[in-house]
Length: 337
Figure 1 (cartoon, rainbow, N blue to C red):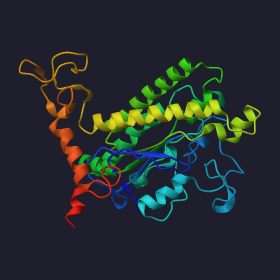
Figure 2 (figure 1 turned 60 degrees about the horizontal axis):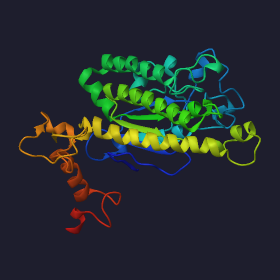
Figure 3 (figure 1 turned 90 degrees about the vertical axis):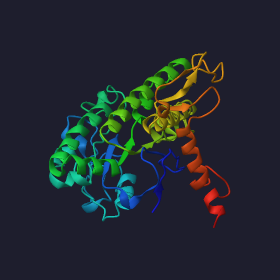
Figure 4 (figure 1 turned 120 degrees about the vertical axis):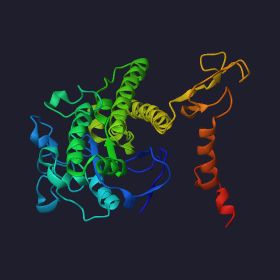
């Protein structure tokens, strides 16, 4: 089994995952208590059968699934999430993953799938297909599940379960594909900035509801999917769409790094705690007549150049015990072996 590190990592595969953990140390898969899923058709398992939309994964979707019947998934059999859930929870694959309308009783203690085909980060994305459960609505449904878990297990046990659970999110592709191809570069940047701003709010909502281990898929090369090749009548990948996805990934990674810092305990990763001049306190070093922030534990930077003790503690731990992503070829502790 793999591990989830307390930083964002990118896995170069068909589904690229950025993983965030807001609790210290390394979490082994066997410690995952449940899986909660948010997103679009990549992760849906039947929610759209319960709403008025044309975006329903009817047959031949599921042709290779159990009994060759529609499973609520947009694929011939299992989704990547079905397979990952099996690995992460170390249980026999749950081939029937009830959507929220059918997820009641003790089954919610293993997780809930809120994903809805055609949905996006923006509320309006997917509306041309009819009803849809946008990301705001999905994160809005999660408190109901949380409250039901609390009522079944008690507050302390529920919070422990929720903080040990894994939260998978695959969202944004439909928003990217909805952006007009005629948009200018400035319009693209503005559109993506609005996407990121909205997504940030959605992630913070989950964090405030005890989500601590969040895996976010970044954007695949959407310009290479058959839909886009036929839309633009080409045999090649559509470069403009690929570039838009790349720009989104850059902004997404920056957002997640920012949230890692802020939500892991830091509230300010831009400005100096000990400051005198400059928007970020960066013009003059820390001197006797500088102003010092009240809570140093919330700041990454002590002065215009140097980190605070809390930031140093994180850096020291990574040098002492970190893997090759932080120190090479071996860490300090390994030198003592």
